[in-house]
Length: 381
Image (spheres, rainbow, N blue to C red):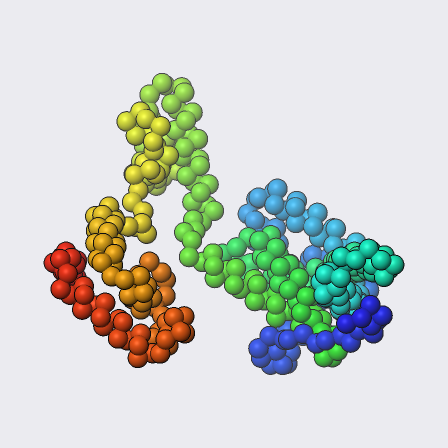
């Protein structure tokens, strides 16, 4: 590619997810359903969008609710894209990315042409400097356009994320995962296919959110009210301990906290049975964690056997010629991760396949009558 040719980009299309046409036809992913506000310039309103009420999501977690309010206020300041902008911005992004790819390719292929200090070399260096400047400009412009495109579609993430409240992840986490899906959609969107971006991005946002829910579903989840009750029990226990100087009974904690006795007893029993892995052992610097068995590591017995087997094999092979030893090592994968075929070994030694087979048989015959034979038998499974 020549320097003068970096001017007429032809935007290449991006691949779409499997079954996208079916998703685009799904009534659950229409633009009207996804956008709470459709017209540019409208102010985004969480209640109008059908967002869950504060108590439905966070149950008196004021800090997180304030974060949500601030987030809604910030994204409401970002105007929605017009239909024209929905086409123009992705086209500009693709053009910038195409230019970046062209310039990068040209710089890489011409990097070896700067060894001669001639006028041609100076012109070449000036061209490279201009191209590097253009590369930075295109990269900056592409990031700026992506940021604008993403900011204008954050409402779309919220409208999808709200459907998955009470599925195991906090609303803020759902929004964050949805934003990751939004960025993937921006990277892959091809405006020339004729689909609205909201229709296309909804698939990626949906995938990111549902995948995050599935990943976290395996963790142990404790209901919020149980955590509050447990916290109340231990706060009460701490207060009574300071007042009397001795550990309070379950009855005393129940009477002071108002938590039924059976729950207090159960909470104290469960937590007393739990032991921290950071608990010191015998007053030393080591903890219980240091004594947990690593199931993936080899046992000392196996390590000793492996070491002895390698020593026996090494001593046995030393009785062979250099070529015989190398053939056996390659054929049986000794001290290497792969097993080599007779044809490949033959090509290395420039011998026929049959000749390599003869060398292999001769080497094995030597080992079978050597003094190391009995030592090797000891390692049979």
